[in-house]
Image (cartoon, rainbow over all chains, first blue to last red; front, side):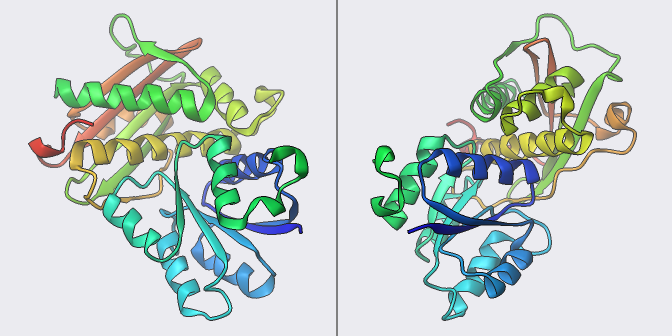
Length: 132
Length: 161
């Protein structure tokens, strides 16, 4: 099964870093979509079939936390696996996100952290054999 | 200048440069250069239990290396100025995000604004104002200068890992 991914981050460099890490992780990737803020992310989710959302928190226009709240309120979007990759250091805010079923990865991240978290969220079957 | 906060800031900068871009930094020997025209500068403001700002200036050759390493580019010098500035903004964003819980406590919620390149580049650095903590580092073939400005006192219970 190929996984369609949406990467939401206001930094194009960070989106490229995450995309490259995903490709190297052994994940069976389908389409990769990008958005620069939560609003663009929601618009992409309305148009495209997405299996995994990877989002930052601090972004202009609409934060990642606000985007996740909109996703939670929409029956069509609330079950999409979501991982937040952020510099966020507030345990209060991290706990609040995790309470919504969101996984959290702290920046700066290692490729292994992303691979292992995606495996936890989506299972080993979405990875190529050699990466198990 | 708060020596404890400066030490924490230096640790965060060194750790972030290494983990984000495989750049290794050590304390700068001697004073920071007064001529900052060859440095690329970025600034970010934050609010929360503590409000303030952070300014980071990086030698331009190191900036190219930073962006190249983050993007995995074979030829870092071929990257555009936009890509290099984006990498610089992300660097200060990660440093600021990792520093604030260490000085404000890990339950405090901060809002970090979008980092920006100040008008006038490094020559505008003087407008940043008085700093409460600073970290001057030697990075590869250049330097990295980071200044932290706080609008109020650092809560004593928040300082330290």
